[in-house]
Amino acid sequence: MDVVVVGANCGGSIAAGDLAASGANVTLLERDLARKKPCGGALPPKALSEFGIPRTIVERRVTRAAVIGPSGTTVEMDVRGSVPREDDFIVMLTREALDRALREKAQQAGAVLREATFVSQEARADGRVRVKIRSRSGREEYLTCDALVGADGASSAVARSVGRPAVKHASAIQERLELPAAAMAHYESIAELYLGDDISPDFYGWVFPKGDHVAVGTGCRPEHANRSYAFLEGVKARAGEKLRGARRILLEGHPLPMTRNKKLVFGRVLLIGDAGGMVAHTSGEGIYFSMAAGRMAAQTLVGFFGYGDRLQKYERQWQHRYGAMFDFLELLERMSYLGNKRREWFTDMCRVRTVQELTFDSYLFKDMATVRPWHHMNMAYEGVVNAVLDFWIAPRKPLQAEPPRITAKEALLATKMAVHSGVGVGDAAASA
Image (cartoon, rainbow, N blue to C red; front, side):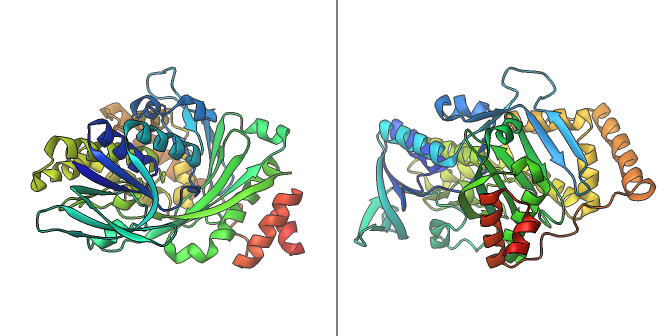
């Protein structure tokens, strides 16, 4: 069996490695091996053993999380499920390290890695797939394979080649900041999530710790993309003194698919990861789901190759395993992120231990947590009490109604000055 996998990222490399290990002839394509994909880089510990990720690339173990609401209300919580375990933490790493490790693993299994761009594909009369690629030098050639796996991101060329309708993309922007030792000590084992109209009208902002820096970012829907830099400034303004003295290492941005694709198989073409819309709403998480899809796709190809209709098993298996979780997270995002009052309510609900346990049970083990009747009663009571307090008795005002009013050019300059000198965003913008 000959298989071409487009996209040597985490999902594509898992698919390529599993297929090669089963005896398939695998060509793994990546258009730019030097590229660093922007990513928050958070993983549940189970992913390390499940996908053979070397622990040497783990940069931080986050054991506490903080949610900061629009009014500045802060809820800190332990990363712990309903039953305490040794692996109650969130793995933090960089995508370039993860992608490199999984590419090398795929090569060790027998996959052939090539730096080339996917151009087009067409089905032949015998059912095989003819793939046109272009090398970095510009030379074009054709590969013939029994199956094609598209793992080439949110703007997937493979998905376009099979006629999948274009999907809307959210825009994510992230800055890597090197902090002084004293400032870095604060982020030793804690990750921060920020909510508010000054952060994003429909997502959240984050400060995630790495080995020698923090990743600061935010995301928004396409209609707000022209304000991405301003929203990033909003996150840094809220973090305030905790980022004083920071030095920029890298500014990066990338698209995130907003729509989950229920159709993932097109003849002998399979889509995984961002190419298949596998990014969870509410959290924006996609790494684990991409790797899980890569493994499912490989297992389907190995077990049912030669029967085109049976490749639909991959599609059905994915929807059965993760469809309900994705539907719930999309509903939760609409309930909790759209408007400062809802965000404030969401922040308060994060104080409830039952909510924390169910959240981390689902995140750490990638299963929908079982909700008992008493869980519903507890959360309903807390939800009503918090709603009454937040909406009528003691409504809280947001610290900032909107991000700094600066253009993209001014935001870039302000970011550069603020990161270089450690001054506040307002001072930097005023100096621009």
